[in-house]
Length: 194
Image 1 (cartoon, rainbow, N blue to C red):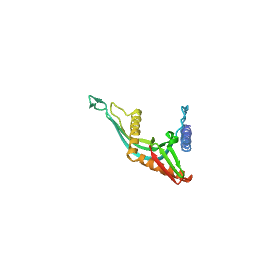
Image 2 (cartoon, one colour):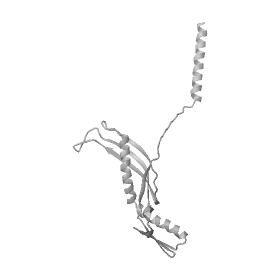
Image 3 (tube, one colour):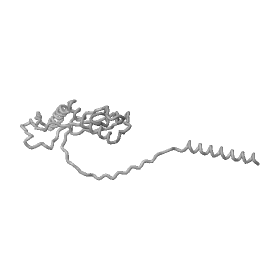
């Protein structure tokens, strides 16, 4: 009887293990994400921009921070991280300042006075943090990440200007506007920058 009971228990255990293994192998682990947003449109603005150039940047940002006392670094407070950032800067002309006196037509010749191009936007497309190092008494926080990206955005527009984005915007505006009006029948299109 004991032998039969042991065999029944063994068969039940083997069956349970087999059933459990089959369940695990045939089941798929999945995730459920729930996202909710309740945004309210705040404002709609009219714009009169003619963007004529965009530049793309791939940057590496090295951010470091430490607590200071009388300009001396407090031990164990140094923190740092490295970012890779992809960004885009656009430049063009603002057509909202265009007035009637800025357009002169002399037969088949058109003369336009336009505001000088400006950087119209600078945006971060993606970023990724690498090599985060917390200080013992100074941890890397979300605010540090946001601050580093804010500093980068300020620098990004200056980098674009240093790389000639304004000059390229002028050149492209002259080509684009010129070709549009030439297709409209003008033989000469001159642009004068204010």
